[in-house]
Image 1 (spheres, one colour):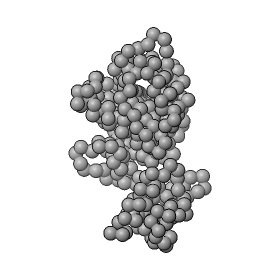
Image 2 (image 1 turned 90 degrees about the vertical axis):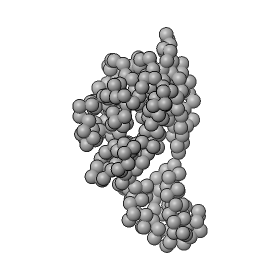
Image 3 (image 1 turned 180 degrees about the vertical axis):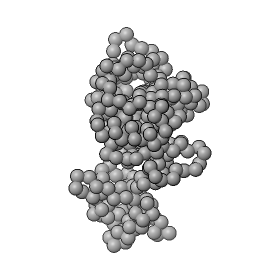
Image 4 (image 1 turned 180 degrees about the horizontal axis):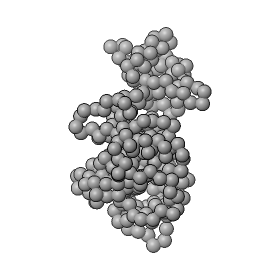
Length: 281
């Protein structure tokens, strides 16, 4: 029972940490939280690593310990991120998204990815309950993913609520990784990964996903509104909690209404729907 408690505490520490933790920093936090010896903390970390609950990661020459994403990870009630080469979950209600995580966002480690998937899940649920139009579960709608990264949001959208999606990014690594993940999910005919400049993009989309930083989301307000049509749903993440209200106000002035907002580790995500276009943006 004691060992189970220690493991739970370690997982909670990592889940709630706002920054990456080195092994030494994690051990210090465990000792301070549980009052167990550092040798016992090290042993429990080793056990959790062998059980694929934790994983060592390496960034810019430093070693960190994080929650493992080398197994299927359930992000929402319906979305499960499954690493390439790992058997997905068998629950018929789970939607497995196969990801071969590289250096781009989208492996599920970052709060902005998880929040975006939670927002999409919420929007789909509203639609299924007939509380939202258009019907976001009939696969007849078009999607746009701005700053696609690993392509995870475009893939999630195509697995649930849109018939096709344009996934944009300007980073060469992201383009390679997104295209690979699109192939792994057999969506070559549904998702186009492109480095098209959004300023030159034309058309209308039923669902727009944008996991970007606040300055970019602010600057894109007019363009995103122009790419929207009546009832378009917009999901925005990559926002710090203190930036959220300003962004909501900005897009409300563009004709969007708030559907969803959620925070995690000082990051925020919002989902909005356009109803009435403003003459002046």
